[in-house]
Length: 232
Picture 1: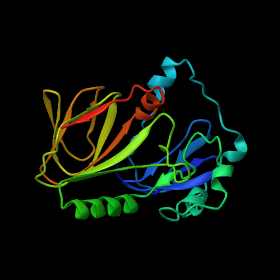
Picture 2: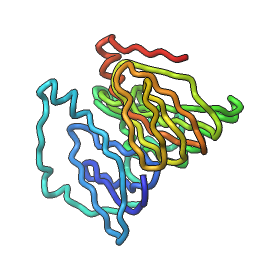
Picture 3: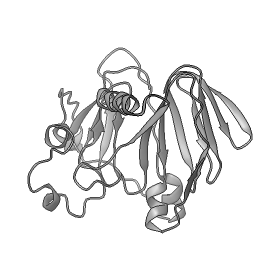
Picture 4: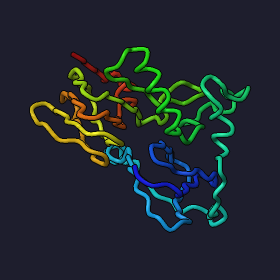
C-alpha cells in the first residue's frame, strides 16, 4: 500500500515488497517479514481465517531455525521460474506442480498489472477494467480459498452495480471517489479498506482514476457450486 524495501521470505525464498505488489504467503509454507532499511512500510494482509475457523482447521507452527535468513535477493526464485511473462512456464511444470494448493508464482508485480489495465482500457475505450491474478501453470486462482483481482475505474466513470455470493474485501491503492454498497455511500481515498458483504450490490464512482484491489472467497463457493454473480 505504501513504501518499499521490506522482504517477505516464503520457505526461504526472498520476495521484495513494493507498492502495488501482490505477494502470496500460502498455507503450509513458513514465512517471515523483515525490514533492513530505516523507513516503514504498510501493507494489507487478507486471510482466509473465517472459513478455516468455521471448518475447525486452524493451526500454527513455528518455522525451523535454518529458514530464518535475512536474504534480500533482488529477484525471487519463484519469479525466475514462473514470472517470465504470460504463457511462459518451465517445461514439465504441470507434472512438478501436480497437487499444489497454490500458485508457484508468489509475487505479481505492480508494473505488470498497471500495464495490463492500461491495455484493457485502451481496447475498451475507457470506463473501467479488471484483471484476475491466476496460477500461471493451472490457470486457477492463486489460492484455493482466495480470489485476487485489481480494478481500475477511470476518472469520471460510474460503474454498473454488481453483486456476488461471498464477501469481498477491497483496498484503494490510488485515486478518490465513492462506493455505494446497497443503500450506503462511502468516500474513497488511498489506503481505505471497505467490505462488500455477500449478495450486497456495489457501484463505484471515480472522482479521480481509482485502482482498487479486491479479494474474495469465490473459489470456495465455486467448489461448492453455490457461487452466483449478477451485474447491471
